[in-house]
Structures are given as structure tokens and as C-alpha cells.
Image (tube, rainbow, N blue to C red; front, side):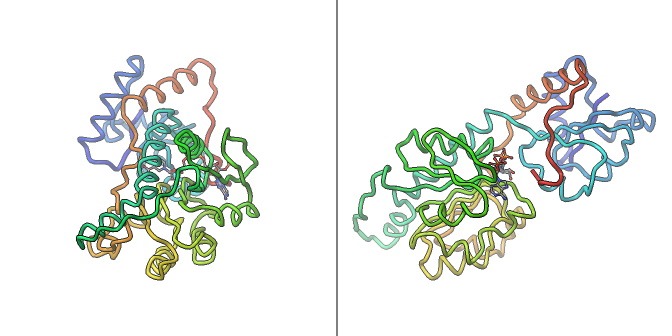
Length: 311
Ligand code: NAP
């Protein structure tokens, strides 16, 4: 018996139960609400999507939870020292989806689409200087499952790409920086900065006034990671000063973005409703099924999030 635990509405939970059950015909996947008290005592595994932490703590035998999402920042934040391991979704399809979004919005900025949209609204015929892809320097913050694939897709499309991680990395065609001392050099050479970092104690507010000031004048920003990595006030100031040209934001401090939030009206901000890389239930269910099958065979829990490191 494996519960699916989520704060999503019931219809979405039932879609997950359908796909997870199809991928695991030998397992019984049920809604948390359908567990009997005896079953709650026995559950070793739970499958989760933004779960209520109190529900997880009602399962005393829980050894690990498998998230169907790649980002588990909220769960880590809500559960201080959980007595079970947290396994997040690592799905190559998701990395492809994210890299497609990174490429799409990089091209949007690279080919000056925000500027031409503003010009059209003023019936203004101005040809902006053409910049070749190889002369456009893209910086990718985070070279993990999503960042490395995105950086390589940008390289394949002719851009000049650098990346930043915590530990030294090698990614073909990408100039790699790492550690605290690697951040400023990367920022200084990023005409377009793409954020694909996890939200941790170290990355919260990382893109503050001081670090945003290191970007070249007129640089643009894409945040597909988590809203709290950016200091919103600092970003607004930089856009208003013209130090930065445009920001494409898919993630926010509060989601959905409140209707009275200034970002909605800002003509140098593109607001996206957290859509850069949605989990696909079929491929995610297959990955969860394989991990659970291996656990049943070997007793090995898949690589889990490090609660101290925060990702
Ligand atoms: P990941 O595989 O854990 O990679 C994280 C990367 O960030 C790694 O390269 C890591 O460095 C680097 N990093 C972490 N802390 C750092 C620090 N303090 N300094 C420098 N580098 C640091 O994560 P992922 O699967 O690529 O996902 C990244 C994030 O994307 C998720 O956490 C989530 O917030 C977000 N996401 C968004 C969407 C969406 O639709 N908008 C969808 C999925 C995920 P090392 O390699 O050295 O460890």
C-alpha cells in the first residue's frame, strides 16, 4: 500500500493515482484520505506532490518519500529533520522540457522581441543592431540536472555559454565557474543570465542589488528556478534605472502572483505562470515505478536530497 499525498485538488490527485497505478500494476496506490489507521502504521513509502507535512508525520514507518516534482524546496523547508529520506524527480524528459523553455526565452531576449513589441505599440520603425549568437554571452546559474542540459542546448544553438555550480564541473562547450569566488566573474560576462539554482539558505536572495550590479549594463534575466532567489525590489530598481533591460520570470515569491502585484503591469517584465518545465505524469510515473521496483528488489533507497545542503 503506497499513499499519494498532495495538497492538489482531488481531481488532480485522482489523475496521479491513475497514472501511478498504470505504471505500477503490482502496487496498490491510494489517496492518503483512503488509508485506514492500520495501513498508516505500515506505510514505508509515500509518493508526494507538495504534501501536507502533518500527513507525512502520521506515517511512523515511513522510510522514504518520492516526489513527482523536481523541486522539493517547500517540503524541505516545512519539514525540519524529517525521519525519512526525500527523493525528488530526476526525469530526462523534464530536463529537455526545461532546456526548450530556456532556449525559447533566450531567443526572445537575444532577438530583441520585448523591444520590437514596445516599438510596434508606438508604430516605431527602428532596426536594432544585430548581435550574432556567438557574440551573445549567456550565464547559467546551476549546472545540475536542468542547468547542464539547458547550457548544452544553448551551446548547440551557437551561443557563448558559461555556467556556475557549487562544485567544479565540466560541461562540454561551457565555460564552468564554481564556488563563491566564481559568481562575480560569471555575472560580469552574462548578457543574459538564466537562473536554475535550487532555493537554499545560500541561494535565497542571491540575486540582490550587489550581485545584479555585476551584470553588464543592459543585461537581461531569466528566472526559472524559485522566486525567492531574486530580490524583487533590487530587480525593479535595476530595470527602472535601465541597468537591466528585461526579466522573464516564471517563479515568484508568492504564487499565483497576486493580481495587484506591480510585475503584471511592468513593460520590462514577462510574467509566466510557473510553466517552464511542468512534470509530465506519464514519464514521472514510470520513473517513480522503476525506483520503487528497485527498492522492493534491493532495499536500496534512490539518491535522496541532502537536508543539510538543501538540495
Ligand atoms: P540540481 O540537479 O540539484 O542542480 C542544482 C545545481 O545548482 C547544481 O549544479 C548545484 O551545484 C548548483 N548549486 C546549488 N547551490 C549552489 C550554490 N550555493 N552555489 C553555486 N551553485 C549551487 O537541480 P535541478 O534538477 O537542476 O533543478 C534546479 C531547480 O529548478 C529546482 O531546485 C527547482 O527550484 C527549479 N525547477 C523549476 C521548474 C519550473 O517549472 N519553473 C521545474 C523544475 C525545477 P553542484 O552541481 O556543485 O551541486
